[in-house]
Length: 366
Image: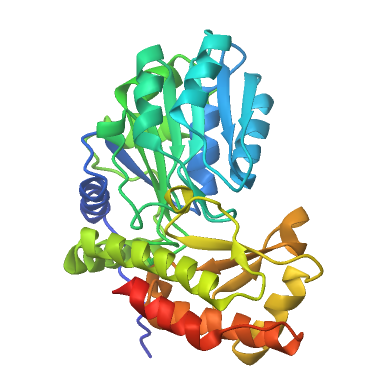
């Protein structure tokens, strides 16, 4: 018996290349786009290990947990790392990046997360890119959460390594990812004796054996199920319209923020300024005396399918995350999440205005 998920014809090089071209159009980039056969951590790590080494001085911006991970990788590569950490309730500014260059003129690499789904903030990549270009540094950006939710424009912003994944705002598969690579980044890798070669982490392998060969022969058998899902995912975005998809995510963020403020009960947006808040997820701070993990557990007991989670690590007691990305960037999902949180608060004896929250969600969405 045939099965649509199992009896798949091999994915040939031409189809693989066509999917890369489709992703490049999504990014409005003329750079090389390499689709990696794994979750986004694969190109995120591969890009750092390919371009950083003992001679690198890296400015690593930390606005959430992934920035911390990038710093660890950079140090493991032998780079000198200057961490620029800002509180998770805000975003980094171009002025702060400029000040870091003033204090450390040897910086030649900048790593930054665009939208931090884990902490609910988003960073002004376009403005920061101007500063990075002024100083000639290589610019590495994690746009895994932001792609599909807000503009991601590596060419216009001067991003040399832009990593995306399909599993968040794009509403696609988690097992495949992509990175756009500038000519400057390729040159940095080629000159780096420590860049991975003949390795699953190697971007250079894709450059030398795939791109330079005219994209005629694949390095290895691709994960065709994930590749077909990625193709369908981008096709769906094209059909709906990227601007429409981004508008849905912006509406979901605005509605969650407005609904939270109307709900009351001591919940408040974790990210102070709406302009700093990511469109993929809204983080909320619980009032003193209420454990975020316990509150989320109560809310999920009524509906386990809701995209609610407590913060990670030390934030588990004080942060709630409403994940409104992909198919969950909808008025219904936002309203359901706040209704469930309101009911959980009410069970604790906390007064809330659930009906007011519903009205605020509807008004903000419109």
